Length: 415
Image (cartoon, rainbow, N blue to C red; front, top):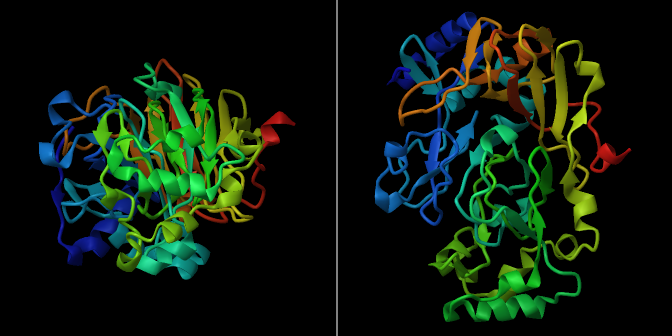
């Protein structure tokens, strides 16, 4: 592993051309680490133990790795490029965000770049020792009030990153049917009295490796302690509704960080951000739970491509994800209708000319050979993936909005 030097912004065009040529339309990305001050690292995302607090103890431990991200992390005291992915070539690196701005049609496709002028999604591993406080992400409508975008998201629990459960492998989602807005209001009124009791109004679901969930904006959830792959919209808005989590205080500021200042103590407004119908849905699991589905049209002898994130949110295809497994000695042609961010979770091999190797340990600031951005041009033309190792080569890749003309619906795995 080596460390790259950061190239000046005015060199992006020339470096991008060389990177695209060297990777046959695919771009090597460097690890992108993000800390969270209010959580404890789960220690399963392969960051070296000496580097869990590489940003400083005051920033909290590193518990997330973001993939193919052009989205900034909304952390207090953040470094300027926190959350932004870098492309590496010839010992230099530059931001994926700048590359998309330079050559958006080629990297993410003309339709996507014309509509969004950016790569509008990202994914990450979040890896915690215990649960995250019960929280929600604002809708596009509410996020717009603070000049931001909403955050629908999804989960998948990769078995390769979950050798242990850690402290609480259950996730509270939504609210118990019959809960009233008055019940939630009392929890907010009791914020400074220790545990405000918001979890008493919810129900927990046991997390199962190799499955996932859709989480629409405005839905309360307290993610459990399985390491999670999380394709989502390119935003970092949230509001914490739980005042005490595992004995740790959650400050009021984390409830209202993405609320207009004049509404910071308006309890009715804060509660109005919740999608009430979805929170008290009597069939919440039926409408949001995801089992993997084999894509027969993209699978063959020695390789299997599975849908792991699919379905729509309020009728919109905002993101999706697949898991590709290639058996030892096998190869396949991978052809997708759009760009994707790729992370290797098991084995070694190659994608086009780029080698793939799953690291056992990564030091902060080091480059690896496990992450790739597959551009629209390369994806639509097709790229060859080969397993050159002795165990299955397994990768996860996520896509942007409206990529697939035929996407399975939630519940399709039962049919």
